Image 1 (tube, rainbow, N blue to C red):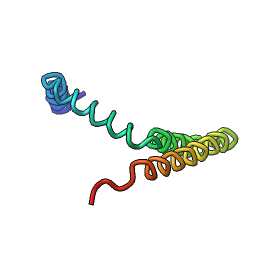
Image 2 (image 1 turned 45 degrees about the vertical axis):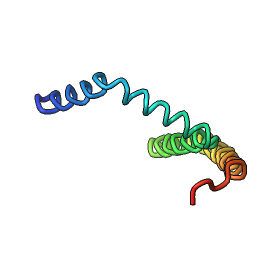
Image 3 (image 1 turned 90 degrees about the horizontal axis):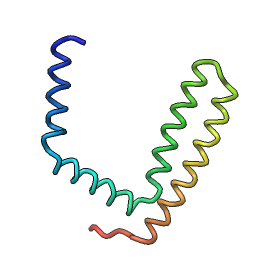
Image 4 (image 1 turned 180 degrees about the horizontal axis):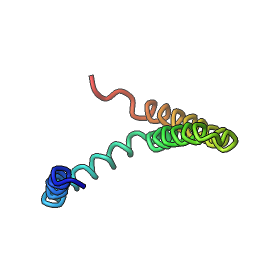
Length: 95
């Protein structure tokens, strides 16, 4: 690793470790977001699984790519269904 990249890495690591309040604030914001958006983890899993399926397909492993894609779409259906429930439960609070 060259010296410039090392200095940038050290700079960002020092920002993360010096400001624990920022880390706690970000973690609370993520928890609040997931509390109001139940489908978000499933939709994120869908994106990760679909990307993984694309990698397997690019490597020529079509059988595993198809299986992973099926699980990705199941995850998407569950995520959209949960988002719909959250939308009905919480409604549009902001104008």
